[in-house]
Length: 321
Image (cartoon, rainbow, N blue to C red; front, side, top):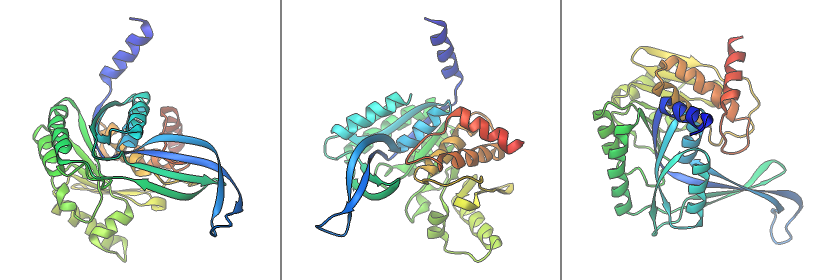
């Protein structure tokens, strides 16, 4: 074995091991020029010049963690179709070990975005719910894989692959594995007992209602954390930064002053960075501050994107200067 391969093997052996489970999707981008309005309807005509495909959803979480140096296994369900084949190739190319269960009865979730003049003009979604047989097989594989990881990330995009989330949380916690969840929907009781949830401000408001002051916001967040028996609750607040609620109190981290180009996938970057840092032994304070820096970088990029280690290192140097 060459010296370079030995070095990579040793680095991989030392890397935090993350198990990412959830709803994966294929993000497709069609870029083109807009020159005129259609005579058939008052909509722009886009002459497509370039196409890109990227892993989305839980797959974007996995690729973000892998880009920052984690040893990542991704457990998900896709269809037996061209989009599923494409997604499998993409995540392999990102250095992620994919455990993709194929379900012939569904189509792989695809989000097709049409971009003209550097603006998203249209998004078309294709999705169906996986079968119970495939989901049961995924649960059995989760129980095997959880024993080998340092931390579990559950990425819920409400596409139907986390119907066994309660059993997953219970099993992982019985093994002593931290469980971080990016939640969706209006019923957070299904996440009870997880280590932490990372809702954005809009998702959080849908659960607890509005607030008129920072004090009321803090009180509602701590009540939700206690009700769900969470170690921590991290609410991402866009231009207001992010706030961590835990047993030891509240930590608020202001947003980084950057130009926001595209917020899609920012939550994936946050939970991936948070999970990587915690699995490596960092404190909550350090993990949240690093995740905030990573989010500030990725919103300056178009579409679902990753943060590279050198970009994060530069942001950390700048923040401490």
